[in-house]
Amino acid sequence: MFYTTQYTFGAGSVGLAALMTANAKTALAFVPALGLGIMSNALVCLTV
Image (cartoon, rainbow, N blue to C red; front, side, top):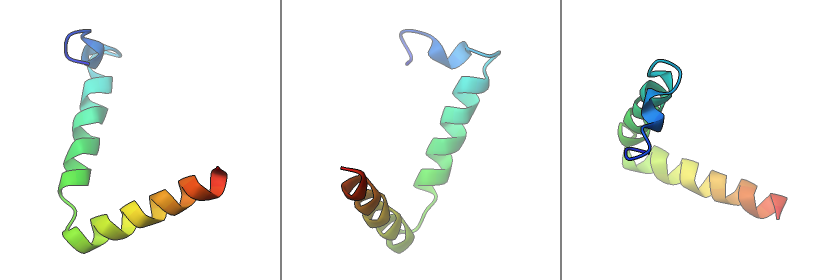
């Protein structure tokens, strides 16, 4: 994403959304992050 400058699309809104998503994911405590990971994996398995 950096080399292609995709973060500048939409007057920087794409880059801002990526940074906000990364911040939200890294701010989770271990147990909630583990629970969300397990639930996400379960949803993927259900669709396959």
